[in-house]
Amino acid sequence: MDETNNHEIILNKFNNLSYYEGSTIKDKILNNSHKEVRKLLNNYNIVKPWDTNRACGKSNYFDIAELKTNNIIRPNSKLVVTRPTSDPEKPVVYVYQNWQDKYQEIKEKILDRGYYEGFQSDSKKIKGWFEEENVLRFGTLKTDSVYVEFELANLNSLIKQKYYFVDKETAQQLHLSYQGQISALGVYFGFNSKLAKGEKNQSLYGINLNSVACLTMKDIDLINLIEGKSKEQVDLIDVIWTNKKGKIIVAFEVELKRVWKDVLLKFQALKLLCGDYGKDIYFVIVGNDPNTDYPVICEWVNSINFNRDFQDAKIKYLSVQKLIEILTKRDKQKSKHLLLEEFFDSDALLDINTNTIYM
Picture 1 (cartoon, rainbow, N blue to C red):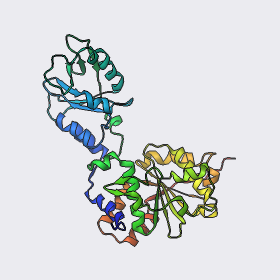
Picture 2 (picture 1 turned 90 degrees about the vertical axis):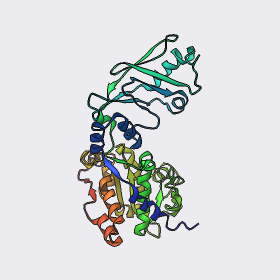
Picture 3 (picture 1 turned 180 degrees about the vertical axis):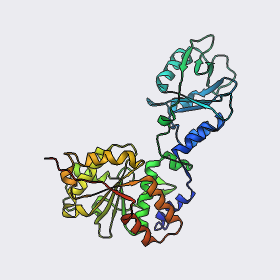
Picture 4 (picture 1 turned 90 degrees about the horizontal axis):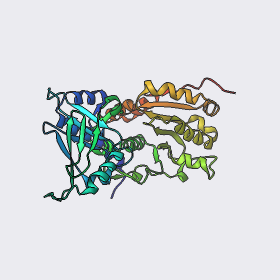
């Protein structure tokens, strides 16, 4: 099978990806039926696969599949229920955060005490009844009752991402999707790509990513390459672009959780292992929100732990929005040469200053 054009397949997949900004998703939640909102929370991966997500209408009850819940529940699982109001297009979303603990209580006080005895069905579904607008009761006359008191969902806490994708694979593997797109974009520009060791053997859109990002650590020009922690740090960098001789051009870290110290430690290790040419590498942090991220990253870069090593480095910030714009322009057949030029020379890459030296 010819794999030489696999990078094109990954990039072309972007043509089929429609996305919404978080603010648009909030509007959709606030102006839709409760059943549609439940679907929306699932489709955009806002409610995670380990959460229980239900809709409950005028009947005031719903059921939960025991087997499925046993398989997915974990310490950070939530119970999310969308309910209608007097206005059918203005639902409310309720959330209960400590769902695993509450579910364990349901098992001990209800399921283990003959809850299913006399039921006609073998499906083993647990019914919950709303006794008040935000108070749910589990249990029957022959078992104890367990109550769940919901809080009104804070949409700012629930909808944390800036962008939400229609494509389910992209939505559920957002970090990997960005890695794959960046890696494929590098190959499109004529570079070679390397992925972090944890992702290089994964697949995206049916494509083995190691057929796009073919490089290993042995292929990279690391002048001071030695075994140990520094090498391990470099091998964890999300995406690396090199020229045909293995000299590193760009190193990318996709950081959506804002753990900047870990990012900079990887970049620091790479720069030191590259010797004199480390100052020519573009170290690019890919993030969701430049207004929030940029000043904090600047503070970290200028801190005592990093300033000396990064004083002459090209530390840059690439917003997800700019990445999407570049991918979109590529889809619209913009000249490859002009697009590459725009990537490096326009305002796509924000410069992160390192002006202060801490002694």
